[in-house]
Length: 268
Length: 268
Image 1 (cartoon, rainbow over the protein chains, first blue to last red):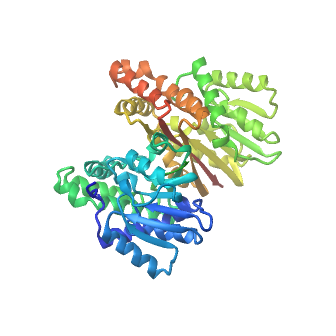
Image 2: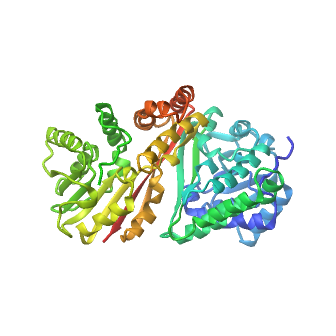
């Protein structure tokens, strides 16, 4: 398979955004992913290691293998993990659709913010299933940019968000995949599929979320596609800037922002 | 004040829909509203008593006064409550903006699905505040029709939902009010304002929500404005029927439906 286009790019700033995002959402998304000591865990699509750090820290007894198709992302993930003194992660370059592992070798598979970038998430989930031992599990975490709404309302802000959704679609991905996890896992043959939505609700009484999520995570992510959106003719520069400004406007004391992540588990 | 237009109408079928809705959402919305024995509670805008029953059953020791501007709704609410043998509710016709009670007489005020229908929710919240004793609380529950999204996606379904949002706006209300509860309560002078979103997530693993919420509550509510929407020229009959059919489509085994209610509390 050709390497998929990663809509957010591979810059240092992007790596930093992913780090902020990982810290802010740590409890909400990850705290209930607990793997037993000595279990073999595959993290499929680890990128620059933002989720790897959390997974490894939350599961110090688990033996984690983190794979990604991008050698430079893996290099960053590896140096990050080494810097933190984390010892229970092994890295491996690989294509999710054809991983170099024997059948039923993993107890658990973990994917976070990966399926949204793949042209064929059904195929990826089906390709991972044979790697899991009977009784083992898969855990999938994805966002859904169509779940974003806010106060004050702004059609410009929705248009700016729509640009990222459209660019991600053009790159073969699906930024609205969160809501689809249940049918995706069912179709791929997993059983006992359970989906748990994790809503981020931010108002002035929760300043750490206003800053950590609205500003540094969500709006930063949308801003990341500015040039592509504007020069690609998806939106005028004026509308874009108005949309971004209206997203920041939701950080004011009377603003509110809602976004939902979806966490799904299934067994084999 | 003129009696506000109630966008959902006053039919028997509507009363039944509200009853189904109340039962399905009972735990999600109401289980944490607990008032001490002997406390005086005002339910402002009780309608036909769907929420009154739940409030009274969950708080058998509280002394509840339920008011509404519509005498015929109150009559229905009263006969419903009597039929159920509930003894701790008194009914009273009244205008939320000018209730016939002395200051600081209530320990707690409760409003559920009321502000969304009022042209001036700020004024209503401000008018209720003097009725609450210092240290007393207000609890507000509202939906937000802009929080509805689903799989499979359908622009027709969103257009049908948009009809109800537009009709409610035309009638002076705001079907997107859920997300605004934090600034509304803050502006009205309440303190310690806390908002807790209550997301309804329905997929085939939760058949009681698929039936009780997607079919009998949400889609039934949208269907309730069919004639008004079509004859008012907001949508063609074909698009409307396609939208409703696409909402029912989300009840299929691979469908998913998301909706969020917001529950806010503040103190005086």
